[in-house]
Length: 335
Image 1: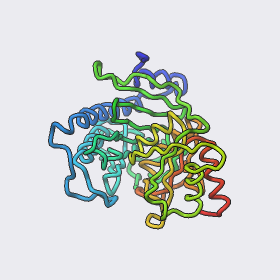
Image 2: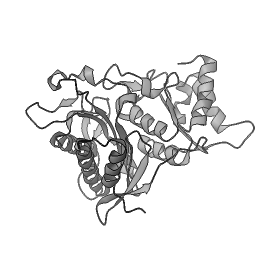
Image 3: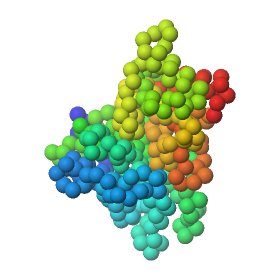
């Protein structure tokens, strides 16, 4: 394991790629990492303190809110608001973005996050995570003119994206547009240390991730694509690996190669995953690692969100595997 910490690695990267950096982004990442350490601690203690189970309320996505969802969201919003580096915060758990009051310290960055992805798995000890996506407010954009509509920008404009994985170990995987690097939390010193430098996703993988329970609701292209992976004619089948936590499934796909497949279906014609909180940041990472991400019709990073909680289909992973799926979509003319 390297002795290089995440912040040290970030500073070294800034010296190389952004020599005129003001330090505001580093401050933002410091507070984001601190938030993850706090969340990780509570996730690991979930069975010992009263933070397991549902709050009994429903969030803006129409989903049961878990106690740890609320804790993670409150932790992140508080840390981001007090960082002095952001001007707006969007969360999957909040109906509207939060704008830092003009009379309080604020910076040029906008951050979106899924505070606790895979929270339905909390009670059974499956890996969960925090996904984040960071944009920069243009210098010529007046702070007091910011509106929710002004935050609707394509994933191509992200300046950084990544996730924290809370599992057998706690990891940070992120990119600032110059490759993807992974860091593992060393609890003995309380630091994320570089363990996975310059991650590259294999062009073809041995695994695929898909929820076969929705098979009968998929369109023909989606059914044919998954059948090709599970029941190929001239080679061994791909192994199915599906956790139901995007962070966990994508993390395996990123490191081992393969495909994560969550298409639209007849019950969710626009897909189920959130574009700004889940699909765009993961697509940013995938492309930075040499992979691809599409909705079956267009590149995920080129999609302009019409609303802050818009959903999308997602086909992401090894470049050749994504291309193979896209052949079925193009042949069928399916969207």
